[in-house]
Amino acid sequence: MINKVEYLHLKEIPVKTTPKNVQEAHEGLFYCKMTVPDAAKHCGMTHKEMKQTFREYLKYHPTTYNN
Image 1 (cartoon, rainbow, N blue to C red):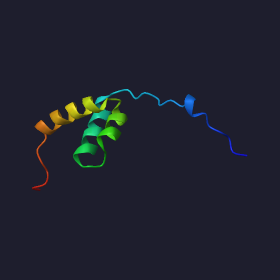
Image 2: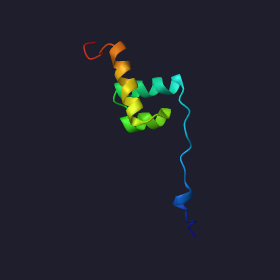
Image 3: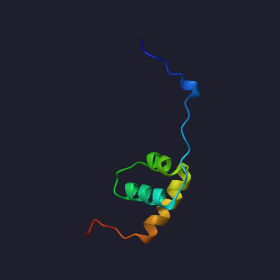
Image 4: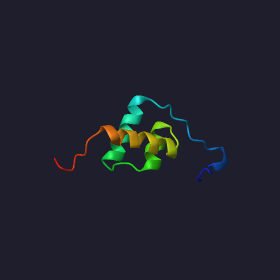
């Protein structure tokens, strides 16, 4: 017999934003390993916050496609 899961009681565990999580998310976005929603969820940010911090990340990290 299959156990039924009550979907109303499922909750995502909130993720604490740490510098390491943010760095992993930025690198995942930079190298196209993550999408913005995945990266935001990875480090506990909203999509808007992730876009803003990633834009700052891009300002201070040079491109790698010429290497």
